[in-house]
Image 1 (tube, rainbow, N blue to C red):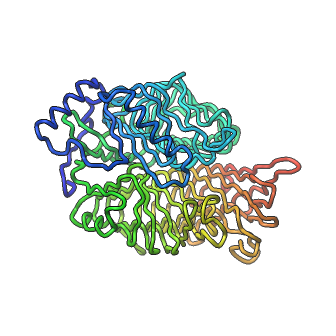
Image 2 (cartoon, rainbow, N blue to C red; image 1 turned 180 degrees about the vertical axis):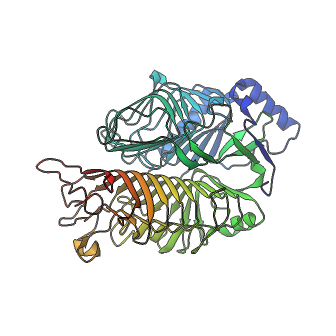
Image 3 (cartoon, helix red, strand yellow; image 1 turned 120 degrees about the horizontal axis):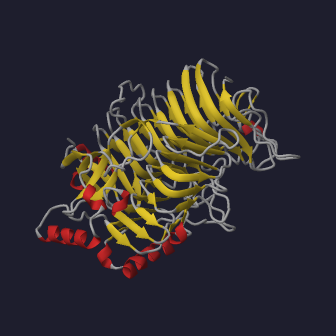
Length: 590
């Protein structure tokens, strides 16, 4: 049992929410509040909007429009929002802007039904969605107007526990989009990827999938599209080896708020919620310290964590002068509305002890102007405990060096704890925005892994100045990797990892590692200065336990080249006189 509040365990503790009429549900909540039941409505702050069908569509739409007006173009803005929908039916249009998370509060996605558009639109001219970042939809069903839901997104745009009663298109009118994520979701019709450059779908189901570009990865998908790498470039892994879905908020028929902690699944395919609510345990929201940006310091949050509380970060930007320290097993740290942790003294933002079952989800970590040795550390150096039965999970944890302001770090995410699972991350050294330049927003590495048996699903790591990923732990696994190497090395001398080696490989497995495996990797170059090259995109020791599947390199500009895909295999990228995007199906060759 978790400390600090109630826990309940079951397969479908609130499955009745999926069929309860909106009016009766609202009446049940009103009755619970009148009778003085505790925890009927936690105080979540001004930037969490909670909607109930009884409010009426016009009032709800006005609030949605107000938020979108603030967030439509606010790529590096300061506002953060979460839009929460109580179980019931809604007739509204929901455009999802920057730093906006839309959440259904039912035990299953079908408990909240939105009839109308729920859409992510391209944020750049000419239908270009390559900068459509930091927005999420989770935990509800949609009957889209015109049958098709538009999801034109790129990085850091989670799509979880959704049921689309129609089709989904992953671009806007054929404009470019650059990578995305779907998990634990059902699409009754077709998913059209179109011009999406790359995509990962984990434990999801659909009527059909059409389209491909550079690499499309399907893990634990019962009905992947037909065809095999490289034509079309589909990477298919039948079972997800080990995962626990992201925790989520629910409200029961008595008006009580819970956080469902899904159970660990092994060798799974498909969604968790066909039989009712997602199997797992419920933890009362009253067991969480609910933090508010501008009010609660890291010291205050650490005091509450030390008392046995979990931590819920409401939307906002939290300036931290020390790390949030997660020391207790099974602690939940949950962010809403892209809650942002901003460093001001060069420390880490989050430090997790070498303990079982910690889950950190839904946070954006911003490096500060003073260089941080690490932005988030999981486990301690030399961690040795096994967490195989109850691993540490990171869901939708995103990192940023620059863009909003100058940001500097040596390592963004350092994973020392064994058996850690990374379930969707974007670790980004900014290539545009404020405080951007080779000597301004400095960052050596996106991800460094020392732990054993670490698994990553949906690993997006881009623009860091040395290895994007440095993997030093044994038996690591990556399912989908997207990486643009840095745009801005001023010359080759500034961008070399050793004698005779141009640049730093994007994905590096250390020489002492005996076993590692990865599926579906894409590495891209956009060099802005002439005469800068990268010798190899992926660099690994050649050993019997080293297996890489389905790799591609692409040059997106006319300067420089990536000379090989993996070690000395694959050959160079080219744009002229004819475009060449080298591919390697298997390494070592089988």
